[in-house]
Length: 571
Ligand code: FES
Ligand code: MG
Image (cartoon, rainbow, N blue to C red):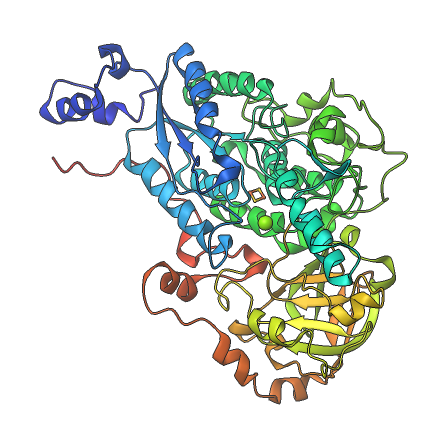
């Protein structure tokens, strides 16, 4: 075993080592400080992050494995973000959580870390932190909840909220029945059971190589997750011994594999910003264009909500991530290693599909090409994305007149106004919802359709926004438009009635206004009035330093790594 980082706190007879050891004793034996790896369990368990509230039990089992392998497990509660609870939007706090976790890992006598996450922003923030401190790190994804049913029909978290609430607005479901479904949706511990952001990021963490293979996607209440947690505890001690750090595990090949997985799974569009941000911490040169290029030949193999039918419990039963990726092994990078130190692709060798309705074979995919399309044009010079699998085929090539909203509040105030000039061919534009503008880039891009059009049977329209869309949502929605309107992107000069053309196959999103005319227009005054101007605290730091969605919406000074160097002693 190489010299441990924690030895700089605990080794030797001097007064400072005495202080560090003494306050940590509380029943710990002498041997705890004699060359045993100190393993932090970065734990996002919180009653206010209900999707992660069971992680204390996971931590307990990780700890058993750490002890067994000769390490010392140390529970480290870290900033936790409950997607459905926090305001103004969970994404505003992702970078704050990443920064706080990174600094606490570096500041403490820690040799390695097990990262416990689940709900949407928690795994991304933990991986960003681990990449920047570059201590040996492994993730245990908390796992999805079990399938809930309502009136005999499975309910998908998130997705069915959108669907049922639109049914109420369309007049085809009663308000009472809608409220009745509420208690059926969240059936057990765990995170959302659709292929939303939490499921996607748990599975992608494994495809990246940061999870003990075979763990991600295990339902939260399944006791096999506890066994995997125990094994992960043993693994992290070995990783410390081997010096297996994120900078060694997470290479360009790992991100390539994650993007293949994202496409084959039909994962959340939010993964794009998260993967870009994690890569930015490691100096891996990942760009938006890589998503389009790598995913172009990947078939969609998984039939899960929101784009499809099934839920995460079905995916696990059908063979899980390994069965999906085994079908596309030839598209994966064979050199990328995982936390075990072996090539990630080796972990797929034994995988099998047990239900080919849920996980399709390569020969009979849900769709021959899935993934994320990256669009450019005079409306999005730095890019925008769309998830074709969640869109309506008839709208993938569309021309319509803009109906523009300058804020979420403006949208809600006017979308059902009788005098709003909107029809099924209109393009709904919502701006001021980027990282800087809102602030925090909320999931508002999948704007609800006008009630009047819903009643006429319209179920989808082209929508364009500089914000994000919930991973559990669907529709023909152009997202992450960059630069955002509040940062001077051309979206801030679009006007009602402008013709907008979406051409997904041609990878373009344009407004039919000559460049000189667009440049000469004044940005919307209503937009400028709506944009956030915080004067202190985290929000001020955030709006002053946040980067665009096209590079992952990290803070400019958090990009990169500072390593795990031990700083000076103050005693
Ligand atoms: Fe936590 Fe969906 S709200 S994962
Ligand atoms: Mg979400």
